[in-house]
Length: 319
Image 1 (cartoon, rainbow, N blue to C red):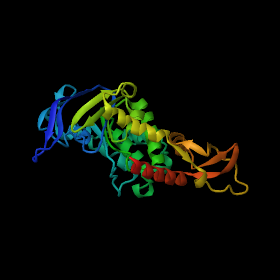
Image 2: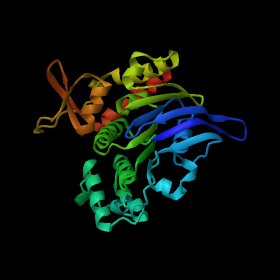
Image 3: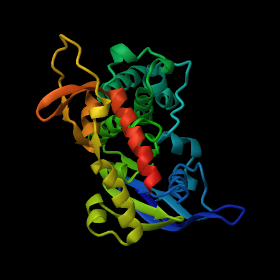
């Protein structure tokens, strides 16, 4: 489907962003490019839709060199999702989703039906959200629209460049779950860039770990866990997974339960793993907190986010 043949990107100052890259991405595969900042992952992604041209080597799509495609049609057939989603502020949600289908002159009723189906897929009922403007949406809702806008014209390939990195942990977890559902439904060939190993392990069919413009190791999440090629991959995986396993104490973040409040739909232990906290708060605005089998208070999504942010700062200092 997509093939890199000895691809190098070198800039005028001699810097090699990508160095002699050979890689094949199969049809329908969800591959994640992961690595530290400056390792070449975004440059690699942008060479697929020719936002960046290689200095040497070839990028092939369906066996044909990307440079031989009409550049406009190439990009129309490739969905692209960025960290800064850049919805058109003067357009409604529905109009934003239908931008590329309109360029491809798709039937208007077909476009509208597909836009509404996609909105339902990510939990944004069209009756509520279709006519809203982007300014009326939260950051997570805007990012959902960005993802389904990229799918609206039914592209063969989906490129995603750190699309969730600006979101808070709870919204990010929710978007990842949405993407997993879309992945199963649409089976697109997807290239996803992140520096977050947790995200890569959760989403990928196959992970490509990059460093200094080159591939260090490629494999399934399980293969990388069981057989890391060296200390760099082992440490990169370990840093990511340890964050999810971190235990947080919720007792300082709870609020009292107002009289007459119905029992919360979800509850958490006072000492909870980060991944468990994220899963619960992705689905609930408020959860009960129990200590020794007794309810000691409530934790809100905002309070959970603050606790996660504070724990992240401590962890970053320790690293």
